[in-house]
Length: 259
Image (cartoon, rainbow, N blue to C red):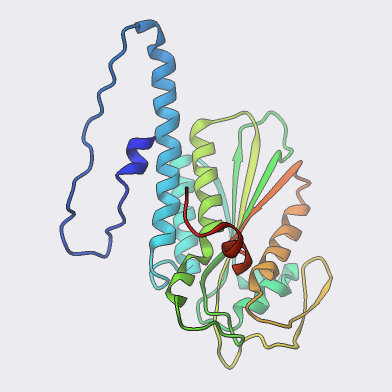
């Protein structure tokens, strides 16, 4: 796992040759062959988890014009095919039918169509959902009409990191095959200013039926998660986990690097 994580480098859009190459072979020496099955199992688990982590890294590192909501849905489609997951992608019309006014309110400022990605891994004996993962998928967050300062706005391409983490997690779960049922939900859209954008003072109605007055359009994460969590509630999951780059206060409290 450490080998794959340690040599990671995102170079998709860089023409310059890498200063170092990938590790082609890893040799592990053991004095006791009886431990080889456990070692092989551990190596496989580490490989799956590292590759999932690097998938999330790749998605977050992509520029926003290459990781649109549609591209997030396409990534989910590829994962579903390779990992044996069930996939359902809701389009704008289906979101309207479900009453996802909070998500659609955020999406109305962008020309990019929103996507609501639902992935299922079914490894349990029953039809009950044991764990539901919900990840914020704002593929670019300008703040909307309540626009952010320009400094470091380029980093807002990473506001879909929660969605990337959730998508990567369920891909690893599908390969490790635990005997549980897991669903992953990623509401994906951009948050941009335009003549159609959400405005401070607007009132939206979430899928739950609750009305929400907008004070700052830069508080879009909780809006799209409100509808995603409302959608997941219908499935009666035993545990629900949401993952999001939700507010700048978290960066102030915890920093922005892995230690």
